[in-house]
Length: 224
Image (tube, rainbow, N blue to C red; front, side, top):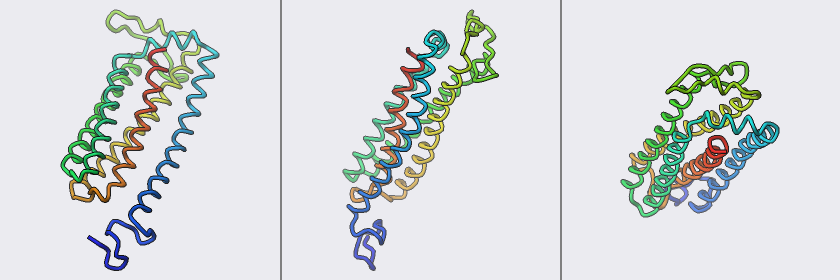
């Protein structure tokens, strides 16, 4: 449907001369936002690198306190969610609204699975006192393992970095779920088509960044 005042498609704002210009402007804005996100996480990666270089023995010891199996599961979940986002964009480019809706729902579900797994991870850390700062007090026995063995120097710093990095990343996952809920609702109401899918693509760009950041976090915190 065209706007009778501008003779442009209804989704084109009056301050753009064409749908293509609006799409390019929106995509440029999203890329600028993503740059600020990269700068945010870059500061945390620098802090990680500095503390690890100062206390490598602590980092090697305490990385074993993290469950690499749960971290690996979450890695697979996020990779699957990036695939469904890409498939959703591909489907709406072909004009397949049902395909878009299905893939958006799958992405939302995968994001929810990620947060549920992270909840169980955090719960185990809290239960055994593997916490940042003054709250660091490893204790308790689970499956025959005594968590007091993790009471090593500079342990609070390790878990401060762990909770800050994974916590902020988890917040971004939660924001992503909100965004996908929003565009899923719009997709259900037929807001997108092969001619207009800018919000879908921008949410996809955001989600790919969230995925990429986790791909760095997982090996740095869990494996090395």
